[in-house]
Length: 77
Figure 1 (cartoon, helix red, strand yellow):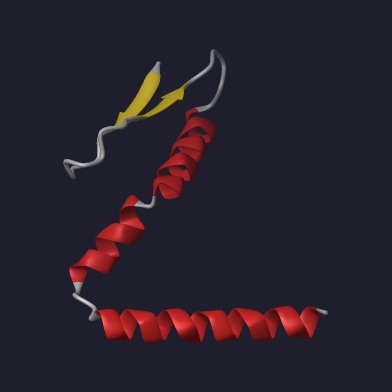
Figure 2 (tube, rainbow, N blue to C red):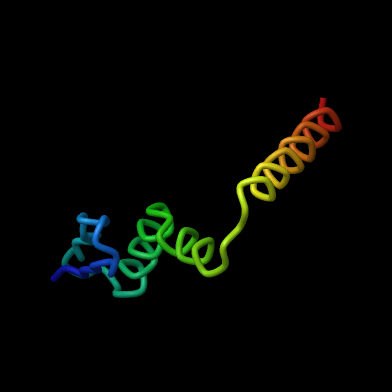
């Protein structure tokens, strides 16, 4: 038995295939499917496309995130 998912967008041509082994619970297979699906980043991209963000705002947010991460790294060292 296999679980398939086909994302709706045209540019995603790959399917997520999770082979369910004999005697394996469906919950474990579903958990593996969710992990694989999250790695594809489909939901993240969908949410980012919901509202348009100007390039200048995206650049500003990227810089803020970098500054935050750098501050976190300095605290741990």
